[in-house]
Length: 198
Image (cartoon, rainbow, N blue to C red; front, side):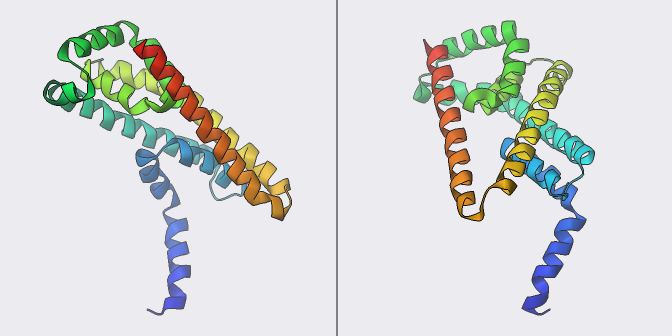
């Protein structure tokens, strides 16, 4: 096979398996790819309904994986190594009690807000506290429908905005958006962490 035929073959594979690749990628990294998918819907690479359903399925599979990691491994890990993170078994038990009491609000808010930087910890905490899987999935499904709708819309909207900007300004626009998004998530997660600790 010659080098000049590799790129067309790669693009053919990419377009042939685009939804499978989207599913696998969403399991690993959801929110960023959701925004990117909004832009890809705008340019016609993805169809809106199949993309939405694939993203929903992939993100739910990721949530199930993190739930079971928390279910089977969080407590033994924290009992053994928690002291290095200033998390004693007593603090862990207290946290479990709070999570059990407020898990509906915590899971819904965490899913819709991408956990303010602590989403994986929240998903594992649900497993560690043995929240029933059906309830966990139902709450995550509600939150994910909202989150996916918002992030796809953002990607679609900024894609339209990006297309309307002069070529010389496009790089500044992308850097600016990434910076604002990153700084917002950073400070929101700091605020939430300090609020929880205090």
